[in-house]
View 1 (cartoon, rainbow, N blue to C red):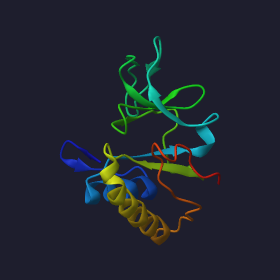
View 2 (spheres, rainbow, N blue to C red):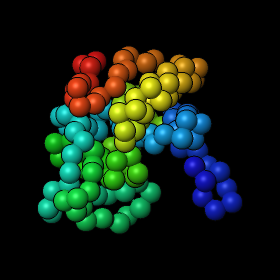
View 3 (tube, rainbow, N blue to C red):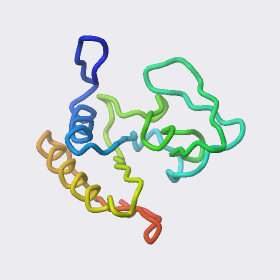
Length: 146
């Protein structure tokens, strides 16, 4: 991540998926699996929800028109993969994570598949074990159980 004139890192895993995101020009997000409650769902925001962004103490009111990733308790990512939450962020202590790559059009599925392959190779190169990967879309709305 770039902040001011300095480049800083969070962890090798976060640096890895951020680099792959830049290389592929596709938005990516990651969530610490142990900080999630129940299923992670892509949906519209709900009245009264707030988003707690990573790197900030602010609370952002969620509008019903906002597309969010949410688990049973909280907003995990706001405006597709635009901004992650501090409540489920991957840190240096994360043991297991879920990664998401967004493409707005069905035609982007091949690019997403390539990005997942690239991400998998780079994660394995830094010592991570990739358990599963797949594409979620209208025809296949649920992920693989891992």
